Length: 249
Length: 249
DNA sequence: ATGTAAATTGCAATATTGTGCAAATTTGTA
DNA sequence: TACAAATTTGCACAATATTGCAATTTACAT
Image 1: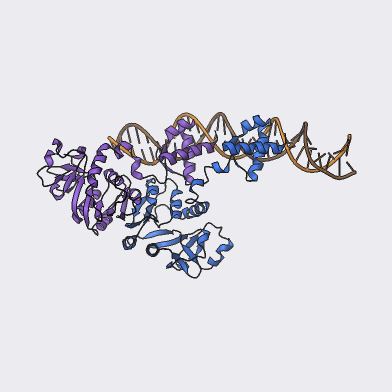
Image 2: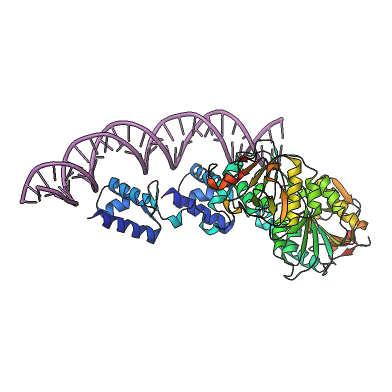
């Protein structure tokens, strides 16, 4: 088999699936992983794909979708997303922060959605691009690869410049007494700023995040307007969060 | 069998299958592989196919050409990109603004590149995500779908907060007397701010942008350090830009 | 026709390039 | 920090290319 045929195969796969790994390519093409590695290096050098640890991805690959599908598009997240959509009204200004749940919300938006979206979540950009009537305002800062969101003081001070009708707060840990907490301080600070500047804040969390804590405290539960989970409103696992004056959706 | 018959046979096969290897051709045509090799060399020389190690492929199947993305990744842009890469040094802080040429530059970066990149170009985010050692700083603002870049006063004032060693300025119009001009004011203003805060600015432009003007003036030619085009440095089309004190690359 | 020069072909020696393997190093993660 | 996985590097071997050369064929003027 000609080397060029391998190149073609690799590029086709990358184009179709957005990514490819050494192991399976080596199997399909019947050569060693070393050879595939060298092929990919050569293709990378020509700017035709991006070499990453373990394989290669296409240029246009949304960074968050690189994580496995189950985590990205679980049924739980779809349920949360559909509930969250009900809150967004035409013409509003909406804050959204990082997290894949937020991306699922965005991908469920109706095609003619018309509002202003302010976000530090870079994974939203390609999604929102498709909605001609959404005005997208990006909050800059230091890009964090893990969350695909911008963070840092710059992000916070930019967020401070906008006043929103609604804030959909991405997945975080919630606990009755200790409130909402985040893994990273940089993320938590952005959340605090958005909370401060939004008329209504709803936290999005799947049931695994209930009764859990992380190490950076964002706010008390009573500071938010409502909590959106994948559970029915009358589920017993939500009992701890009743009578706090927050809406359970 | 006449040489011309062999040529015909080889070309037919290449046209039908897109590829051919010496071994099978030698068998089919009853000549040695050396002869086939020479045939293919001759055809290659006449531009009728592409000689590769082990055989030949058709031009249309050349994985290293950019058929399905000719618009996006033209040969011109590749040339510009490779020249621009030489300017980026480890540890530097680099500004890049919008434009697809800039994206091509990014996709040619070596995998272990290590520097700080400050940009308003959202199309760079997925590309740069793959480079673990590039610190990416996003300049926020109003996202423009057409250019996939953030624009507006916010973007400018954020750009003002960084001081760069190098600024690679995306495609714009250049004219000897009228200098560099941009299509949109919002884009032009970001360019001006980056220019101001960068030690060295290089403009990237394909030959079609030379001796052209747009309607928002960015700066004089003498304000930039150099001009990177797809032309060789001694091309006559660059004559207008000599003796202005700028480097032609 | 026929001899001669030029072109073509196959072959062998040499050079170059591609491939797989293993050790050493780096990287990511618990 | 330490462990496991991935990557880089150097190397030997295999595959393919190139080159020079001699044998053969072709072209063509006489």
